[in-house]
Image 1 (tube, rainbow, N blue to C red):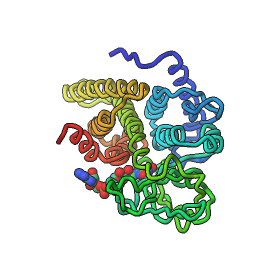
Image 2 (image 1 turned 90 degrees about the horizontal axis):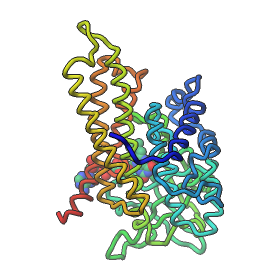
Image 3 (image 1 turned 90 degrees about the vertical axis):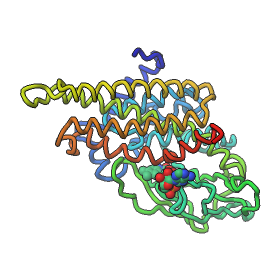
Image 4 (image 1 turned 180 degrees about the vertical axis):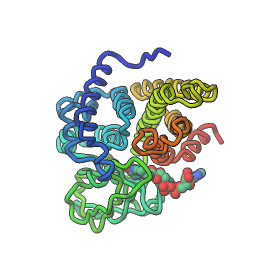
Amino acid sequence: MKRTLFEDVHEDFRASFHTFLEREVLGEEGRYGEWERNGIVPREVFALAGRGGFLGMAVPERYGGAGTEDFRFNLVVAEECQRAAVGSFGLGLSVHTDICLPYFLRYCSDEQRERWLPGIASGELITALAMTEPGVGSDLASMSTRARREGDHYIVDGTKTFITNGINADLVVVAVKTGEGGHENRHRDISLVVIERGMEGFERGRKLEKIGQHSQDTAELSFSELHVPVENLLGQEGEGFRHLVSNLPQERLSIAAAAVAAAEAALGWTLDYVRERQAFGQPIGSFQNSRFTLAEIHGEVQIARTFVDQCTLALNASELTPEDAATAKWWCTDLQGRVVDRCLQLFGGYGYMLEYPIARAYADARVTRIYGGTNEIMKEIVGRSMGL
Ligand SMILES: Cc1cc2nc3c(=O)[nH]c(=O)nc-3n(C[C@H](O)[C@H](O)[C@H](O)COP(=O)(O)OP(=O)(O)OC[C@H]3O[C@@H](n4cnc5c(N)ncnc54)[C@H](O)[C@@H]3O)c2cc1C
């Protein structure tokens, strides 16, 4: 089906991002493989991406960005990364641009904008978002990281875990409890503060070892009697939950878009493989089972992509609802899981070998049904919106 989402400017952006991936990420020396083994992407990659104009699309021009809040550019990044068998979340770039940047764009004061936006656009300041704690993920309002006000500082104590870009991050948007729990609405106790590299009392734990997405640095962060100046409060005190909720649709769309792109990439690799690989004197793609499987995947991917494209336009028009974003997230990540599994099967034993992108895509896919809010929580959001 002809896709009408993109304009020439997006295709030009696609071509230059593709060149960036080939030159700086894949490289002849197989750099990406080395980052996967190291469990982290070098910080310079963010600076190179910033120099190429791939991080600051939505940042106003006066702070070094392109001044275009158009999520189609983010979609291009996700698609090109997946096609190159490099997860956009694995690189940490999508967390920086799709998930963290909107908090800085929406809630920074003028002074904070001057302080942080130029570095975020250039990639010199890497960002992370820390909500999850060892004891609390889905039930965010039950978090225990506290920030008590003392003069012109918040004193922060607590631990966050599973934080993407946790080791590399210079600026971490941290959800903390500032209230005493006296509110009728417990969500009103939550605020967002920006914790910066080098602040005394900010410790990073080890990089966590995961099933997939190996190049993504995922870490535990701990805060002990950490003095955060009140100038680092992001948005309004007590409004943190509301700020999180209003940004989550974009985060979920970003995950959905990467999931569809991953499924489409898996389909492409599998088509190439089944045309070449022979069994019983014929290409395995010519067996009816292979044809049916790939026809089903082709259809499902197109349908999912159409929904994601519509959600992207809705986001650009500030009309993406939490329910539609939640639907995109659960449906597309479920699809990704089904597709990579079925594609892997068609590779036979080679599908289980890590040198084949399909094997890595299989391992990388599992978490997308978990992070960004589990798919069960997505269905809760949709179900509640139906009055259930
Ligand atoms: C690789 C990776 C990267 C991540 N990056 C980040 C990050 O950058 N920042 C960040 O803050 N977090 C991050 N996370 C955390 C992620 O968002 C959480 O793991 C996720 O929200 C689930 O929380 P949990 O792990 O505490 O699971 P739990 O909340 O303990 O859930 C366990 C199970 O119970 C189910 N469940 C819970 N509540 C309900 C309910 N009401 N109804 C039905 N079922 C329910 C869940 O669906 C799940 O199946 C990351 C996680 C991973 C694995």
